Picture 1 (cartoon, rainbow, N blue to C red):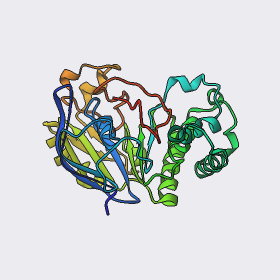
Picture 2: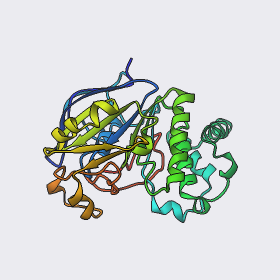
Picture 3: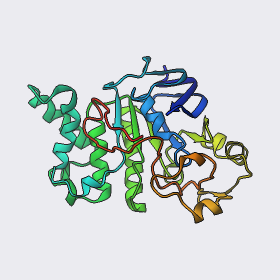
Length: 303
C-alpha cells in the first residue's frame, strides 16, 4: 500500500488557487525531492499532509487515512530557526520535546529516555546531545532536528529545507543521514529543497510545483527540458555536467534579481528558478518556524 496518495488534488489559500490537478503516490522506503519556485506551494503541500490545511479539491490519503493533526506515524522537521543559534536548551532536551507533546511529559520517564536515546543513536548525535543548541554547528543542529522528528519512528517523514544555510560538507552529511534513515527505518521521506543536485544520488522521484501545476515522477521524467518548459511556459535548457550536476539555462533575470524574504506573491510562479537558486521560503502564508511538538501536534508549520 502506498504511504501517501493524492488524486486530482488542489490547494487554495486566501481564496487563491495555489496548485491543482495533482495526482501522485509516495511508496514506502522512497525519497522524494519537492522542488519549485518561491511561493509555489511546497510547504502548503506539507501542511495538507499534516492535516493543518484542507485539500480544496480531490482526495488524499496518508497511510490509508484522511490527513489529520497529531498523526504520530508522520514525522516533521521544520525549517531552521534563528532562535536555535542562541538557545541554551540541550540537544537531548530538544529531542525530548518531540516525545512530550502528546503525552504532556507525565508518567513516561523511562519510555522517554529510551525513545530519545534511540533517536539520538539513529541520527549519530549522541556525542554532542548534551551540549546547548547555540554551541552546535548548523549541521549538528539539523541532525538534532532530524532526531526530534523521528522519536515515534514515523512511516512518513517530512523534511522542510533540511539543507538550507549549510555549507557543502554539512549538506553532504545531512544527505547521507537522510539515506541512512530511509535504509534503516523503511520510512518514506519527502524533502523540500532548493537544489536537486545535493540530493540527486539518493532521490527516487521528484515532485515539482510551478505555475499552479504539479508534476511527479523519476528525476529523468520530471527534470527534463520538455516538462520544465511546459511547467514554466518558456523554453528551458538543461545541461548535465560530467559529474551529473544539472544546470538549468534561462534563469538570468531570476538569478540577477532574487526575491527578498516576503516577496510579492502576485507574480507567484512566473519566474524560473535554478535548481540551486530558491533560497527563500515558500510564502503562501505566515512564517512561524517553531519546532516544538511537530511529531505530536504539528502546530506552527511554515505557511
